[in-house]
Length: 378
Image: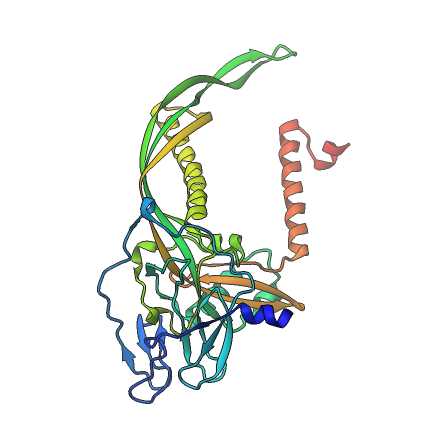
């Protein structure tokens, strides 16, 4: 029965001829090369430009979108027959691109089905795996709490280049707000010993108003398959440098279709935009009133002229091992920014805490008129 269910979950899919491209000089499989932004043969160096008909992906009207739901791919699989060697391979339904495990040919499938939207654009890899490795070494070298031995011995495993799905949203926003702003002033008073002291007092005033802002390319992850905190740490991406999607760009890389649908992505975008607008308005209140603080800020926002793009963004994934534990990290395939986890030296943490305690004790010592730290604790 289980075998029958698994068979029912396997669908047929075909690869795209643009990406299983053979080099005209040596017949090797050509991949997209981040160093030149074009197709290249890794064997003989032959290069071929990718022809584009438009400068960037089109902004699509959110209100007119039809396929807006999440996609629960579950255990669905798809069967690919390699055009080069004829081998049959089973992939997750989420996969858009991979390579044949038998002959190394690129396997790029249709990036949509009857329930999903096709990618509108792609931000091509601009950072090579060699550059990603160099950036990693520089990044880990600056991690103060990472043990020295880990910095010296950390060698990233083979990098895996992945295109992950993202949504971007544009919108006009109009917000009404209310809140309070505070202006500090210094007043004098006499303490219990009759000595004159000073203290800071904040006078609070109510305010309200309106605020307009255009939101450009609010970014939302289209997959929940990966560590969202790590992906967030790779931002920002320069999404304005996208190009219309062509399968050639993902040749030689792994690519994944979205599971977070347009409707849920927009809800996440609105929540993120709301936080940013509240921060902007708080800063505006302080600036407008030459104030020192703002509090109790409440914002009500309406959105209009909402558009979206479905983009594929480039990420290098890798890991390194230290004391039999694996630490994962990622590199932004466009900007080279590194984000991940590293081991922590307990000795360095204890040292920093000890120094902090001594510094605090010295400050208290000076403030209290003690001659030594010993006197402070006696």
